[in-house]
Image (tube, rainbow, N blue to C red):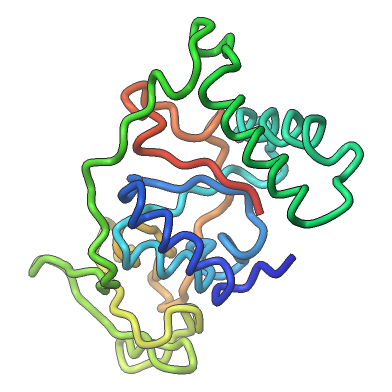
Length: 224
């Protein structure tokens, strides 16, 4: 199965038109949703930011932070592909039947034995189909990333990320001569007093998004 941005984006685009935009999409750290580039941004993640969706990555080697999805995958495999159907058409019927049962008939302990469909609400954020680069306030410095991934800073060229080629990033002064770089809401790293770009160290957040006000209509869980 292909996971390049040209294959995955049309699927997400169709979902956004049908269900609206989520606030965030959580994934692990593999392609196509993440990379080792600054901010863990992949080409697909850059498109998500330009669509107004936050790429939310779990900590490395922490699948429990996406535990609900891991549990869904286990049930999906048990009910649909063990063993697999004899044809693609038959397999597709199995997936459709599973979707109906899982969302509309099967009670879930995490939902007080209700079915997911009884809690679902479509996002109020409609999708226009337009990708927009982030806009920044006048209190930050803006640099556009060159095609080779560099920006001009204090008379020097600093490599940030080729994934962001052509995109504007914000540079905000902090204390002690440190500057913070962001692409929209995504932290890319800092420029230190030696004019060196530094990616932020990995952080442990103890389970990812913990805001109890987040719901299924605003946060989509995916795996790569």
